Structure formats: structure tokens, C-alpha cells
Amino acid sequence: MKQRELRIRGLTKVFETPEGPVTAVKDVDLDISGDEFFSMLGPSGCGKTTTLRMISGLETITSGTIQFADRDLSALPSAERNLGMVFQSYALFPHMNVFENAAYGLRLRKVPGRQIQDRVQPLLNALGLQGLHGRYPSDLSGGQQQRVSIARALAYDPDMFLLDEPLANLDAKLRVQMREEIRRIQKELGVLAVYVTHDQEEAMSVSDRIGVFHLGRLMQVGPPPEVYRRPTSLFVADFIGKINFFPAHLGTADARGGRAQLRSGVEVEVGRLERLDPVERDDFGIDTPAVVAVRPEHLRLHAYDAPDARGTEGTVRRVLFLGSIVRFFVTCADATKEVLVETADPPAGVDEGSRVRLSFAPQHATCFRS
Image (cartoon, rainbow, N blue to C red):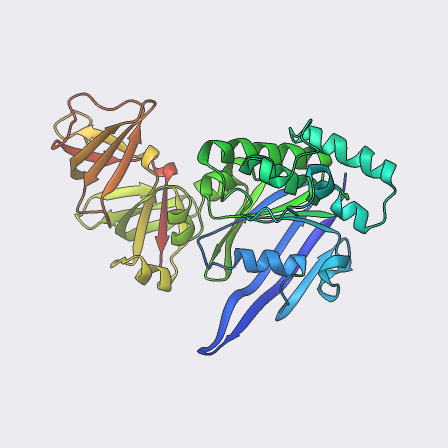
């Protein structure tokens, strides 16, 4: 198992364009170690793919450093970094069969034929390609072609396994199967993996940790449950999963949380405080010094006249039965937009058009404050 660390410090990429310089990646600091499966997550144009390309050597660095196992990768050409890379396009050679495509990197390295056979065939078997070694890419499905590209990337025992949106061209069911295969193989081989995706579910389901990018900045890094439950910015809170924002004024506050007042005057307790970036405050249309964020599954829905009804009020616009949960869309003057509530135990008598109250436990609410 390769217990070596990728260390990135101050990584920046500026592209020169006719309109002037454009900063695609800005001052990224990141450590990835051991056999970790790390995902770079974010919307299109956020800098995640540019960062991966700088790690691989396919893109030059404007400033900063990239080190792996105490070796400076910045000074090495891509071919000398010993990296296995899988692209969104499978990039297979159409005139080579499955075995020849998978063995291509080993042949370039002048590995003897017997060693190639001993390395490639078990890898093809592990990826579910047994019996297909003589077929050509045109005879394979999209999922099979992507498996061949993964086998090629891993065949020569790379120091790192880099994947750039590798499942984007596959259908939904096959994407789920393939992402589990990729993680299984990566863990079996013990190779460090850096995975780029814009798909939140994909990143959350396979990653040991994720890094969320926005406008070239690395906004937050952590295990998926931590990033989901404890976002440190409005962007991360909004991008990862679903969330409801309630503009507020924060009153008393200490290390254990605080008490906030919503626009209607309703007072709520919050269990966690974070800094509100002034730029994000404007971007999200927050017109108060603070905003309370609560996930849909943490909101409690009460019939308006129920004995235990409390919290801000609203009106149910739509009810969706989704099998294991029921999703309510609630119009609420205290929220920035329509409120989502998801529950496995909906209150009796609440339907479309019903007046309701919404509440939440303090430990499930984050208050971002100026």
C-alpha cells in the first residue's frame, strides 16, 4: 500500500485571454494522503478540472507547488510523474483490442511480455472484463470501454489515480455501478485517487473526503457527512444537498449557539454559528445581518392548529409522495424562497393548501452571521 502524501500549496492558475487575465484557480492548499479517495466537487468552471490538470502536468502552474512523497512534481513533465489518468472520453485506441489498450502503458515502459500478462489479465478480470480481452472498442458498451480505460490507467502501478468526470457519458444506473467498482478497485490496490465530478451524490457516496470548489477557490474540505452537516459557507450549504435559508437578526450568542429573530418576529434557537461572507450575503439576496440554514429533513411540519404547533408559519403549495419520504413545498414569508420539508412521518390532515407551522431543533440549525 502506498502511504505517501500529495501536498499542494498556494496553487494558482491564471489564463491570459483577449479580455485580460482570468484566475481559474486561486491559492489552493490541500493535503491528500495514503490510499485516500479524494473528490474535487463543484459546478462547471469552478477550477476543479484545472487543478487536476496541474497535478497531472497537462496544465502549467502560474504559482504554487505540488509535491508527492517529498518529490516536486511541478518541475516534472507529465510522462515522468507516474500517474494513471481516466478521462470523460474513454480515449481508447480503436485499432487495439481490450488487452492491448490495457497493456499500452506497460509496453511503453518496455515491461516483459510475461509480466504484462500477469499484471493486465487479473486487472481485467477484477473489472468484469474477463473473456473480452480480444474485442475492440467498437464492440464494447460505454461501461465496458470505461472499464478498459481504468485498467489501462492502473496497469503500470501508478503513484496516483486521477479521474476527470469519468462517468459523465454513462446512463444513471451504470454510473452507480461503475462508481462502486472504481472505489472497490482503488481500495484493493491502495492507490491514492483524486476524482473530479460535479455530481454531489457521486462524490458523497465514494469519497473519503471531498473538496468543494467555487470560482477557483477551495471552499471547504472534509468527510462527506461533515461537509453536509457542518457547511462553513452559504455556497457549500446550498451546493451540497438541499437547504432552506431564513434571513434573521442574531441576538444573544456564545460558543454553544445563539438566539435569532426571523423577519416575522418569530424567535428561534440555533446550535451552530458561522461567519457570513459579505459577498455571499449579496449573492444569495440576504437582506438581514444573519441567515439561519436548515436542511429539509430537519424541519418539523405542524398543522397550524395542532396543540404543539410552533415556529414560523406558511402554506403548503405542493405535496409529493416519494415512497420512503413525503416532500412538502411550503410558501413562507420568513424564507428566501419556497421551503422544502422532507419527512417519513407527515402530520395527519396536512395537504395542499393547508396552513402550517415550521420548527426545528437547535442542533440542526446553522446561523451565518456578519
